[in-house]
Figure 1 (cartoon, rainbow, N blue to C red):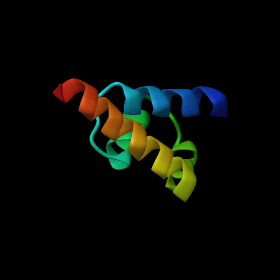
Figure 2: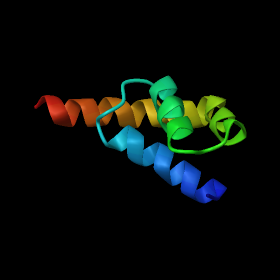
Figure 3: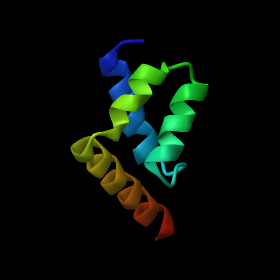
Figure 4: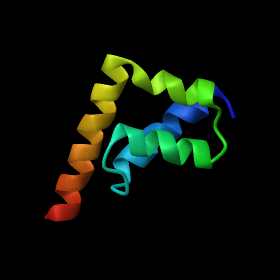
Length: 64
């Protein structure tokens, strides 16, 4: 599992509407077998902001 795959999966989880926080994404990635080192990369401000925006957008689509 490469870094590119990891980031794609993080965004897919955010877009999927099944997670509510970036912490939920981290947990899901760990369960799926991604390394702790990879998951730690989601702590950056810009990446976290992008993921939160996608989570909000997915929640808005699910809600109506």
